[in-house]
Image (cartoon, rainbow over all chains, first blue to last red; front, side, top):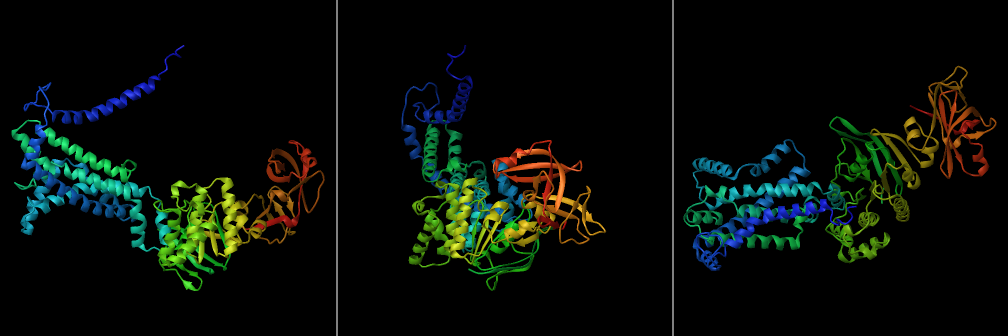
Length: 272
Length: 350
């Protein structure tokens, strides 16, 4: 009797729900990009016209340019070091059971559990103590900031690599040993290539986590050498024009581009 | 190839004993199956031979070399794993080449051996495929080729067929046996499938709770099981528990006299295979028991009959479906004589 209702109400509800969720996720992105083209320097809705001048403004702002380069540098080095340490830690935890490994695992993941600002202040206070003890500067140095960012990246690598490693049949590595490979060759020729998708994904996430971090960096940077998120925040203290939206749009395009490019070579979606 | 000698092998994980006092001499070119239920220690023993598990005590010799403390990658054993364990990021050729590279086989020789190994398992047409593009049977063939390409001293197979479907299992099984015989490979084959073990092994080792129960040819073990576990695990068996009376005859608890030999006073259990029990209208042979037929299961090639004697006790008989006349008399509720020869009875240790 209801045969003329061709559309299954359940499927319709699901479709609506999916669109809603995507809409909620993409809404802020959409507005940021849209705002960056508004003509008015004070945010005003609807805009009186559109312009590209905020992009020119962002481009000419020395603080943003320096911040971008500094952030890229920190994120790249932190991700590189963090991934190496994280891979080693994950292999230790999954393949070589030892006493207290659960504690070590939780400890390595702990930066994920802590509010960034708390971690930042914690690291700051620790650095002050360490400075007194070592008689060396840490706060405001590149090395100090880098170490803090490495701490932020490690949990991502540990999580992704150990999840991947957990799903790998240990007999594949045993087969390699059986065929005459020593531990080093097993690792380089078999374990590492099998973990490639997880490692690439971990590197990408580490990069992003470090690149967009504000809270931890906040208490550790020196005047003059700031990261991009801090430069943005400092600009916001005195200005409220769409330059920020333009910077954010550039950042979205940059990170999105890196993600798409990576996904072409390694299917990150299989790992994450 | 080489012979393998296991001397008083023992493996303990914490307080749990996985394998105890395992001694076995495996001859050059022999196929020995380790058979037992899961957790019996058969895989642990194989892994000790491969070098993945260090024995708690005892020694392992491959040829004349004591390999007890030699790392796995120096032992030159070729192992095939239950879940294939192919390298997912390498093609079929690269999988086979891996072991040859590790053994530093020169490039020219290497190519020849890769090709030979692929031909041997009929995988030449698939040489550039990745493992995920192959079926289970094909993957296991590649695993076999990979293990044999390094010309191992011993060929080790850990439940290699249990992930394959029934038809394929038999096919790969027969291939493994043919390869093993053609190449004269000293082979250890771990399985929990008795039919597999019976079909292809020269000798079988039956294990239970880490202890070797019996070693012998398939025929030996089936016809002359030494104890209750072996008799019960391998095929089916009717058991009579009882004791030897002062006149020197075995009498079961239900009062049935069973003629068998050799009898000692200590004998508590006698067994007879269901297919050695003949149902007839009159008593025959050495042992005859009057029975009532309780259940008849028609299984095509044979018929399983459950018969009852002296009220409670059940006797299983397997009647070959050799002619239609035989099956006619088997009706539930009718009576018959269950007959078996003294020679077909086995005396079992508990």
